[in-house]
Every structure is written in C-alpha cells, then in structure tokens.
Length: 208
Image: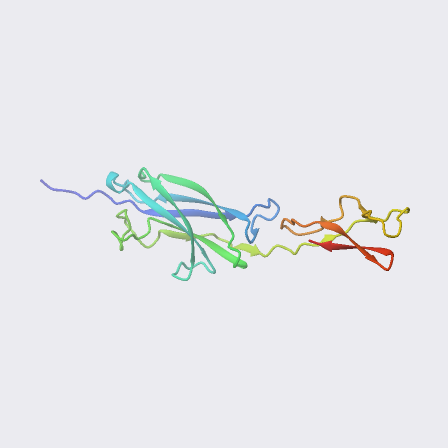
C-alpha cells in the first residue's frame, strides 16, 4: 500500500508594525516609553501544522538594519498554541519599553518558530522552507532621548510688613516650580530658606 507524504506547512511573518504612543508621530518613541509591536503570522504552505507540532514561540528583536543577526537585541517572546491550518493566520500585539541606552532609527524583527535546543535546525514545526520565518518592519522606529526638564519660578511675593528679625516666609503662588518642557516627572519643589544677617533678613530659595 503506497504511503504519500502530507504537504508541509510554511510559517511566515507576513506583517510587522511598530508604533509609539504619540498618535501624531507614531514612528517616534522616547527612551523609557512604551511602544507597540503588531504582527501577523500566516501559514503559506499547502498543509496544516500537525497536532504534535502545534505549539511554538515568536521572538521579537530590535535591530539597526533589516538583517537579523546575532548582534540584534532580544526584546521578548510570545507563545502560540493551537496549530495553524493552510492559509490561516494569527495576529498578536505586544508592548515593550524603548531601551534607555538606544537612540536613532531601529527596526523591529519578529521571528516565528525559532530554532530550539531540541530542534536546532528546523524549530518545532517541520516546514516547506526554514529560511523565511523572520520579517522586520518596513520602516524604522525612531528612538529619541526626552528633552531636559526646565523648572521656572513664576512669582515671589514679599510681605510689605516684614520686620527685621521676624520669621515670615515669602509667599509663593503655588506654581513656583513648574515644568516648562520635557517628559520626565519632577519631584522637587522650591522652599523658602530664612537667613538673618546683621539684623536684616534675606530670603533666598533653594531647589531641593
């Protein structure tokens, strides 16, 4: 009785999109901010993934170029469980923080069914082609450093009835420490510091 081989599947990452949090500049992200990677994996082969091979991982990398190599930085992974019929696909959206030591244009790679310690040549799924499992974003994600903070004293009010040797702080209007630009949280405040010198009081303000 002749035995025919079932057509193999072929997993491919058919779409990868990386977007920053700003809807006006989706291709930008600041270091430390969260960006989203949305990708699609399609079985472009003639056969379905066998039940015994129905679970594999998708790896996500960040790369300086559109060539996946050992120099690229691993960001994380997502497990797929449930196989995939011929012509079927699945989509995932994952969130990552932009590394603080990276700036400039970076591509995001998704590698589906990567080699493992038990299957170093083919990955978990035996496919028609093992050379088309990785795809990068079409355009790079631009990673920028956040602008520096700028603290400004809005106003200071000195009481008219201040007496020499008295202890009455200057009145600040509550907006004395304001972040004019920048993305970082500023947990500092301006506090009055009383000084007395030769019977005359001077008031200075110190940033704590």
